[in-house]
Length: 201
Image 1 (cartoon, rainbow, N blue to C red):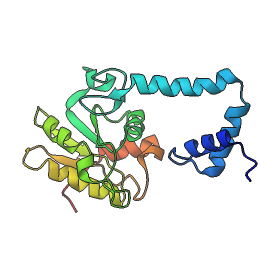
Image 2: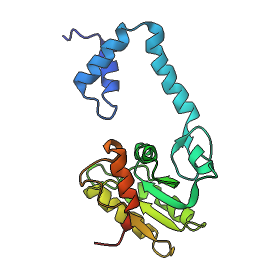
Image 3: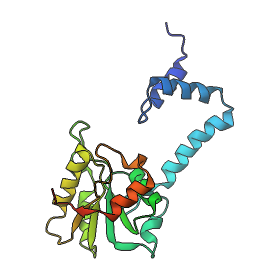
Image 4: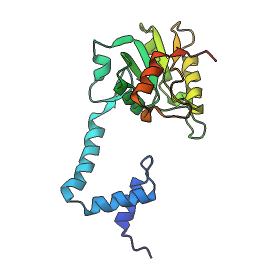
């Protein structure tokens, strides 16, 4: 017989469904939430409800936002003819914090991965192709520099074939096997400045 109350075990199991949260972390979080003042613990649930109620994908770039279009897409100071394609909203935030990209973004919503069962049809490639036909002069692919990221970049280039729009990639100032989310701002800035044609070897 387990000494853990069923309700606490259920909370642990729910927390374990979050990305990167293993059992020990889930147990630590669950015990904290149970011991914390009720207002503090329930504020977490309230924040989740509020975020889910207010955040929707931007109809242009597919980034999560409370307005449509999102603040970046709606900013007249941004160059809407330059589109940087990223895998996730976290990658967008990483690039944006570098201050190096003056165009707009397109969030794919993931990467092509046979291991994770994600195919190109689950990404926002069709929306990107449609968007590119409306006055875009360059698409820079900023998928992560690893096997899945490179494969995803090829699918992006294929989806944009026939549009006549140049497709570039970030220069390899971004280390292979790395993740945009954890790169230094200077590394991202240099990679953007030295981006190259996506079809180059």
